[in-house]
Amino acid sequence: MTFETARRHLDSWRSEFPADPYEADDVLRALLARAVPAGRLAALAASASAFGRDVVDVVGPSATRYEHRAHLPELARYDSIGRRIEQVTFDPDYHTAGAVVWGSGLVAHSGEPGRAFEQATLLYLLSLEGEAGHACPAVCSIGLARALRRVAAPEIRDRFMPPLLFSDYNKAERASQFLTEVQGGSDVGANETVAHPRGDSSYSVSGEKWFCSVADAQQFLLTARVPGGPAGTRGLGCFVMPRLVDGGPNGFSIRRLKEKLGTRGMASGEIDLEEAAAWPIGPLEHGFRTAVGIVLNTSRWMTAVGSTGMIRRSYLESSAFARYRRAFGVPIIEFPAVRAVIARLRASWLGAIHLAFALTDLEDRIDAGGANEETVLYHRFLVNATKYALSVDATNAARQGIELLGGNGTIEDFSVLPRLYRDSIVYESWEGTHNVLVAQVLADLRRLPILEVVAERLAAPCRSVGSPVAKQAVMQMDRALDAARRAVADPNYGSRFFRLTLDRLMTVARVAYLLDGGEDLAAEHLLAADDPESDAGFAARVDALAG
Image 1: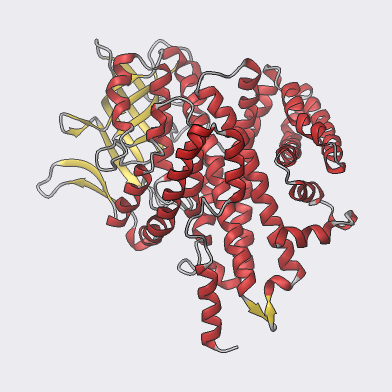
Image 2 (image 1 turned 60 degrees about the horizontal axis):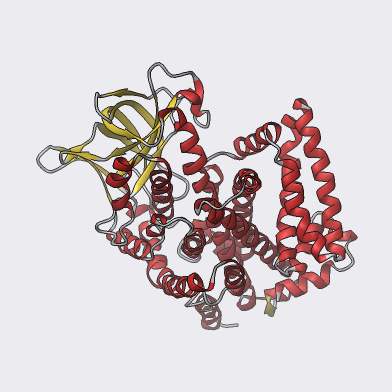
């Protein structure tokens, strides 16, 4: 093979990525057709198709530039005549991509209850390019808008929510979430930032926040301790704080921007607060409930959806590359080991998208106000467990894709996969590390009657299918549930082994939703992944999944 022939093969690989990733995604469209009413579906399909094309034509090329180390955000603390401005400057391409993302309506849908499928679809398509510098700002804005819409006093809601909902990027206000402090990390109950009443409806906030993504935002959601309140999380209020007051910085300064492994196009910093004006979102005594139950859970749901988009891209990149890349005289997809990787990536994507959109259905019902108590309980379990499980899957998928591409897979301007890998690792810690989320799930199982709800929800599709793989799934689920019950009853066992138990339970969750969606091959593959040698149909299933 000549040099030029090899380059033509690589060019063919790149050109195979779909121009309209929504239209090319039969699985996504089938899931939406089952879940979204016809009137909403037609509008969603049109906007998703247009946005998907923009992701390919605009967001991807722009992100390739502004995610490069030579074009990352920079801190500008003062203007040219020495006035404090505390601004972040970006490469112009960052704003080009932002205009497309905000113009899609991804954030604007937050103004109307029950638009979770629209938002999940758009974020999934955006995440084909990873975080791309705008997924985090969009998700933070969605979380704040939801909190304002659901629990804020009318005058606070009407002041702060409308600017978040503009589709015009140049007019819209973007939001950030400042919860973490240096001494606490995930232990938010250790936070020390304080909020003192100012005699009107506002509070004066002083302290510091340690991990402040979207440091350029115009609105900040933060938690602060109210004097006289109880210790721990119960003494935290939830507040919205504007960036500017009277045209200048509102009692905040950016200590520095952080050098992150991933999500580099989006600015994260450390923020100092000194008598910053802020307004409560909902009752002060419900502050932590608002921050976690609405805001962080929104981010966890959308992080799971974003991870799913990255898994999809890893599968598409790898499967196309394997068809065009030749080694030892044949396309590398003809090698069984390569086909096994492609099959594993496809099964991982199928499991992720069915699980993420099952969670999206719960989000849609809860946001629309039509969820019963059982649905709320199941959501409490699934939002934490899904975020944990799919963020792990995304990192694994990107790493497997990089390995399949070989040395080329590590080159930033050769493939999107290195950026996806870096972003996915950040997603693993976004809104809770793995151990924090696993511990939260276990604590919820101990306090609330969740486990039997989980058992019933996951068993239902398996019973309706009744196939051998469904029966195997039920057996694995029963074993996982027995281990979960032991973890609930035995604190020592639970602290040591519940993460492994949750891994098994979430494999069953993926399988249950795959069976419900008619994806029996992928379901069987996920169940047999731990012991392929004992599976007589493993090789045939690999060939079917790899295509």
